[in-house]
Image (cartoon, rainbow, N blue to C red; front, side, top):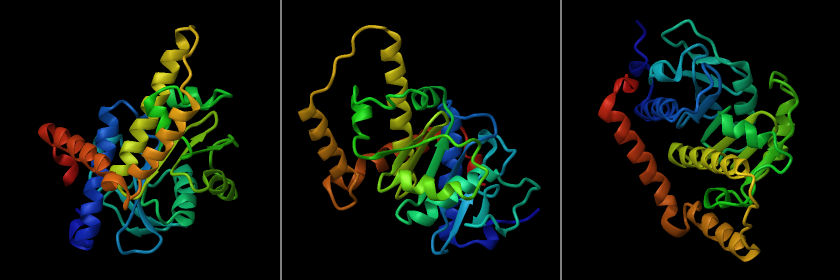
Length: 258
């Protein structure tokens, strides 16, 4: 049995534990699509290296040791203790973002029911609830080009993401990014929740009460400060939410740490 912990730095092992926890928490929140989708995290201190899930393992099976370390071209940098490879679409999407946006250390992609539903609407995400207002000015859109198996799509992905941290892949799903696992987790959950709220609201068939332009702008200003590491609270809320989620996970199962 390969001892991954003995072959990596303490910083990488800590990153592996955090990313494995992210997968387990997503599983508990019902945000998985069988063995598909991906969350990646840059390896501390290693330029161009990031961790990704082994393609074939369920999110509930993810552990720190099972994650695969690859470079931006998909080369495996450390043999994992299993025979699983990686999802090529995950390489295309995540290598594009990690290469173009070094500030986004963690990137998550989902195919949730609500996320795909909103991605398939011409209107996209509407600023009709507080969760959605978090993403005013921080959300890009990328048109569907088929399964993400072509490397040439990467340039268009990053162009559509621009300076935003999050993106809706039209007719496909959601992408959330963050400067660390905590911010990425909160962005993904908040975007997913906003989509669920929008679908529920639209399903009522009643007129939608619109948020005023002034309130939208004030929300944009406040959330921009909250997400700034040097701004209001230094995104303390994200760190607190992430720590709470990990505590809940640890109450039932700590096997992801192995």
